Length: 319
Ligand SMILES: [Zn+2]
Ligand SMILES: [Zn+2]
Image (tube, rainbow, N blue to C red; front, side):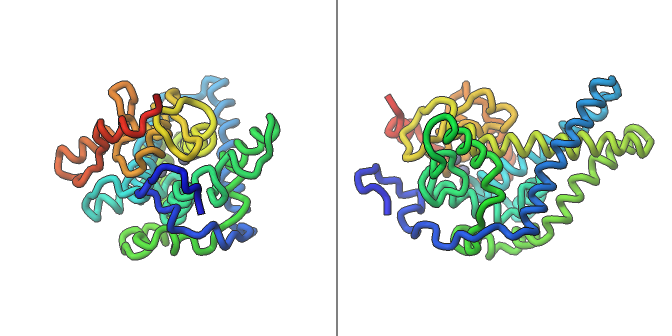
């Protein structure tokens, strides 16, 4: 498979893999669960907007939102993505488990499914087999583009499942008892991620009503924002923005999304150098996840941190 004239990219495993052999419909129960997890935060966002409009939004609700968004978001970006998917640094088992638990609280699926899907995205990026490319099999023109973006953003979650994806793409995680434990207890951590903002609300406000407001902002609104930021990396960052490096896909850097995505929006940089712990590769490219990894390295909690030298960057740079 592949284009023999394309530049060699030995770090990406796509050339060793057969094209997606076992697509199957997503089970009905999974489709319903995904629908609930996707739609409920949208409806509750309406409630949050109504609360803000009526000036019933209080500062503790926003504090609880930030207290939940930041660690859970970093659980996805540093934990699920840079540590577990790409092995861009090493750390202690307890910290690996903690990152996996935090990422699980995002309710974007069990950790091993998440990693397998994302490795598959890199293996086939923007070619048949990519689970969420906006560019494959959606037709041309404006309608095709909109269909592609909708598929890449959220539609793909409902469409097809690769029954063997975890064995094919994440055998290392299936052999990691810490990660298998967090994967199997997905529902527990998802609920803990909702119980904490409720508890914080009660603690600060002293009433069940304050707890429910905390749950609304630290649970539903946080889920909505984090889901759609993550989805936007799959959709917008393969469609809009600039390209610094030569890659076989349509990945792009979308600077305005970098702060909220903790640096993941430097997505063209990432596709060019998937194992790099740092997606922001210039001082001007804000990369909060990279800053956290560098801080962990400084205090001895991260090691074997993968960096891409300037010469390698120059070798892939577009003019
Ligand atoms: Zn991508
Ligand atoms: Zn990646």
